[in-house]
Length: 96
Image (cartoon, rainbow, N blue to C red; front, side, top):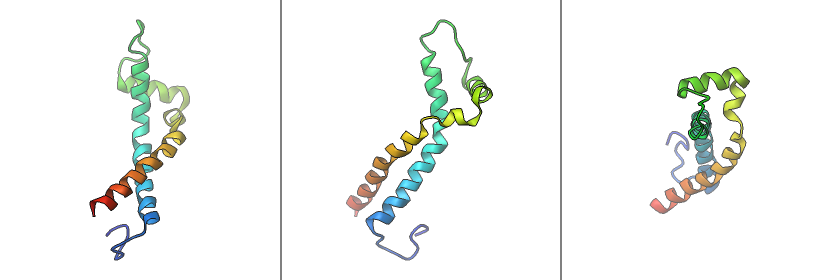
């Protein structure tokens, strides 16, 4: 009701647009943490560790290239989220 107001039966496109917005925003919030997780996983097999932990990884990545380093590759993640948005809409339709 918050998104669609009094419209009890919004069309497929309106539902998809809302779901797409939610998945993009959620993905952008989580993506920096995912970047740090990937960096830490990549160093796991090395004898010499580049990062001592999560906060150290955040600090060094930010010092190296600023905020943009946390969002490299995020465009592909946004494109991929389209499928998740469609799945949310179909789940909502099947639930009724």
